[in-house]
Structures are given as C-alpha cells and as structure tokens.
Image 1 (cartoon, rainbow, N blue to C red):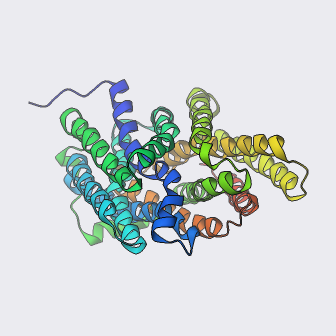
Image 2: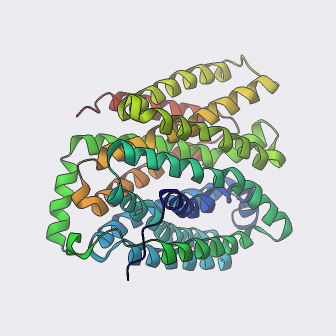
Image 3: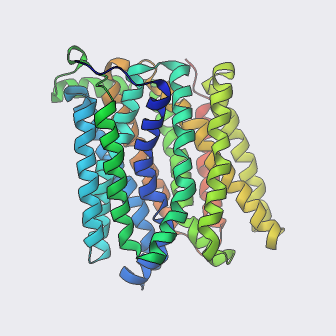
Length: 397
C-alpha cells in the first residue's frame, strides 16, 4: 500500500536537510583550509581553495547525469544511489594522502551531492508550479540557510578536538541520517506512466527544447553569475578575515552572523514574490547588489574606510551578497522550469549542471587572485552582478 504524502511542512524540512547535505560539505570546510594547506600544500596555500570548488564542479557534472536518470527510473532510487556516491567520496577524503587525491575524492562527493541539487529540484517541480514553487523553494532555502550558519563553527570544533579529516566522518553520518528519513517518508513523485525511456535521441530532443527556451537560458546564465559570486566569496572569505582583518580565530562566529542575517533574503522573497512577481524581485535584488558593490569597492580602493568601519562595511556587503541568493535563485529556477514540467528531471539537471560548472569556472580565477585584500573579490562580484542585472532585464514572457 502506498504511504500517504507527507505534510507540506515536513516536505519542506526534508528537502531543506537534503540540500543541507551539500551545504555542510562546503561551509564546514572553510575553517579547515589553513590546516589543509599546511598539511598538503604548504608551498601554495591558495590551492587549498580548490577543496571547495572541486566539490562544486563534481556536483555540476553529476547533475547532468542524475536528472535524466530520475526521469527514467524515478526520483527515489536515483537519490539513494547519489547518497551512496557521496558517502563513498567522503570516506575517500578521510583517507586521502595527497592534495590531488583529496580533490579527486571531493569531485566524487560532488557527484553524489548532485542528488539533492538536481533530483530534489525536480521532486519539488513534480508537486508545485510557478509562484507557489518559488515560495516552496524560498522556504526550503530559508531552513537550509541555518546549516551554513552553524557549519563553520561545527567545523572549527571538530578540527580542535580531532582534526580536519574527521570532518568527513561527520558528512557521512549526516548524509546517512537524512537519506534514511527520505527513504522512509518520501513517496515517489514520478509515476511509471510519466517516466521517459532513457535514450540518447530523446535526451537530445529534450536538450534542444531546453536550449531554445529563451527564459530558461537567461535564467541559467543569471544563476551561474550569482553562484559564481557566492563561490568566489566562499573561497576568499577565510583568507580575508585572517589576513586583511586579522580575525581568523573568530571567522566561524562571524560567518554564522553573516549566514543568519542573509536568511532575510529568502524570507523577504517568500513574503513578496507572489505579490510583486519573480522578475521584479530578481531585478531589484541585482540592482541593489550592483549599487552596494560600487560604493564598497570605491571606499576600499581609495582607502576611505579603515578599522572597525571597514570591517562593518565588508560584513554588510557580504551579507547582501549572500541574501541575493535567496532573493534570486529560487525565482530564476522557477521561471526556467515553468513550462518544462514534462522534462522536469532533465531540465533541472541541465540547468543545474550548466550553472554550477560555469559558476565554478567563474569563481576559481577570482579566488586564486586573492592577494590578502578584498579588492579582487569585489571586482569579480561587480562584473558578475552587472552582467546578471543586464540579463535579468530580458526575462519577459
């Protein structure tokens, strides 16, 4: 007998925790970057940033596979296979003897994280449409943001008690708990009659439909630019706090403040998206971010702020950048998926794959340009934000 569908509240909580599986694998690593650099790449400490972007790259590639598979075999089995890959990758990271091995294992973890990233989005699309889907995504992102708020503090605590390798044991246990919940409580949302046979011809046909969909393409490009700015920030942030502001020891606590304040983005979007519409929310978010970045970059470049004032301004700017994710990503994804329900799994996977891989390629040069100051990060973010603002003006039906 088929189990009853869970309540919307439990559905949001479960999806938030599945997304948190990938978030904890990113944000908990931030305090570990100096330790990893000292242990595995002492002559090139900036290379430790690749521990973040290699995971994201693997996640982007994995979404290109997991989505079509979920369209053919159902959401649940593909999600559980991805969980197995994630746990295997975390175990390999725990035992990695070199930085190269660690990065390869992080890519494997990322492949597994593609389950929540792509299949989770398709699962939501199976049940909700349009602004309601954007609203559900906003609630998911709002709950999901709580995990990055505490993840660096957790990471720092594990490092102090045991070491950076033991973080990967935490990842394994958390994934196992969340996916057991998913296995026991989530019903399959894609009935057999709605599944698409897995064939290259049909995948190519669905791909052509997606790449000729103007709104989907523009939304995907904006997602790539927004995520690129975020990942560049994550790669550089610990170094900026440690080298520029001399606050490395308290970085996890400050990151918690940033993440909690940034939750307002998802909360504001959930409250106003139905009234104002998805496009207006996206445009206003990008416009504000461009203006704030211009002001912040100018003040730092010309040395017009210093000390506590400089730190407070940087915190405000960083919070705004994180909040932009909550104000834009759910809306952009909902707009892209609005008329692609019949290929939801493939469309979700292709959109996520393109935007994630592209955002990684955008973020790596910005992160590697870190010179001990926030200026390279601010310049990169300004370029990404201006481009996204221009493209968002084309998001008309």
